Length: 264
Image 1 (tube, rainbow, N blue to C red):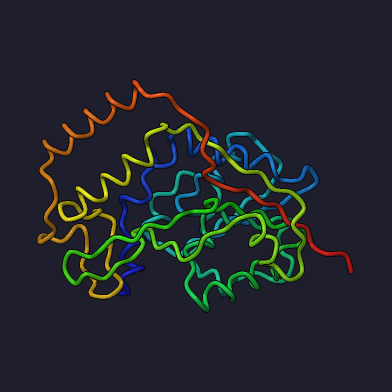
Image 2: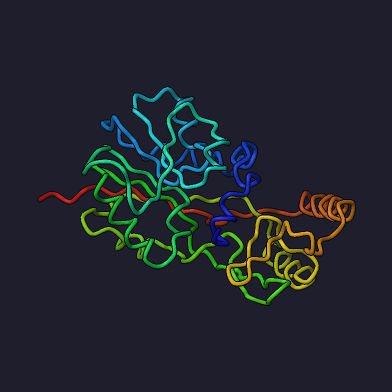
């Protein structure tokens, strides 16, 4: 199994509480507000455990909902009632313009060369009128060294970064009609603390969800030298005590974009 497949088959990526944070719910709620009122069907590609579909179900929208996901671990952890079909984004098993809206939330930044281009064309083909996308906004991607072979890679397999200008050009037959940057509360000293953490901790801890794309070493491998559980909890407790005393600011985290099919 390829390293990135092993990454996405990690059950820890798809737990219900991972999408229950106030930040994630804020992103999903804002994204749901972009769905046009006239839409009656929606396909969510790369739906993961169906958190977005579950939110739409809870709101009792009139939409007919469907999900597509490549990870069997994600499908098994589904939190929605809608069907999630197993499949690949570059070969969608539906006819042209099968859904009023096709959404891809926190998906396209993960797609490697070739798969990315084919997937965008497939999304366009299956979308009847609208495409809805959310991605990290102007992400400054950080690359982690594998402790086994030294290969540096993004632990979440983010392949690219987006802003308003780059998003406007990704679809051939759709125009970008609306976008919104989603801001979250962050601590003023957070950038400095994150840099210090990377410098001081990079040789001691390798994320358990990470899988090196070069040698296949995993954060869950027995050889992975992580901090002890007690020390990890103590550090997290100290970090929270410090953070709770710090002022916050609004930081741009995601961008949500709505596209409409060009008129002929």
